[in-house]
Image 1 (cartoon, rainbow, N blue to C red):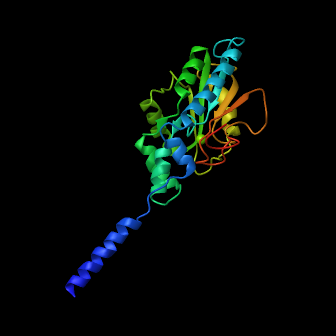
Image 2 (image 1 turned 30 degrees about the horizontal axis):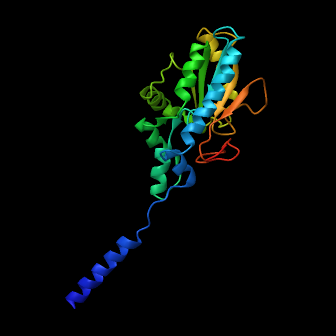
Image 3 (image 1 turned 180 degrees about the horizontal axis):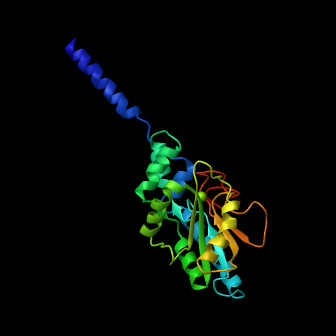
Length: 233
Ligand SMILES: [Mg+2]
């Protein structure tokens, strides 16, 4: 009897080992986190196009008279590690788990953004980050950016988070604040000439005299601006 029980236990554990499902990330997470995928090169191409546009504009604009506005998550920094961890647990986004992730300050940089910001600053432009990260996450966000070599005053002048609980996700009201915030820092009459983001809401609701550049985040979050999220443009 004891032998039989042992054999059964062995049999069960052997089955458990064999049948344990292997974790398969969602297509977007696999694409963004994978080595040698087109995610990095597509992001670099978008930033190169944005660089070309702002340099052409800068040729006809005085220094410190123009700015670019960028979203943060999946535009400047990459949070695929957070998404991977949630999927491994069979869970989706929660504001609590997201807060904990932001406090680690370990999001990585999106390929191409550092060179783009260098080009903007060198060409006489200013940089505003407008994000739907919570105001409670602002300090960690700025630390995370600094960990990646992106410093306030050198690489960007404004970082606007979203106040909770009353702040809305739509960014228009905060975009409208950017020129005023730059004016009190000594940069009057600044015009935003480009918006960069990974969601459709990362630009003003109304069309204007500016260009929008979309970073493809593989449909991991929100309402992606990429027409066909994932590999291929
Ligand atoms: Mg984003």
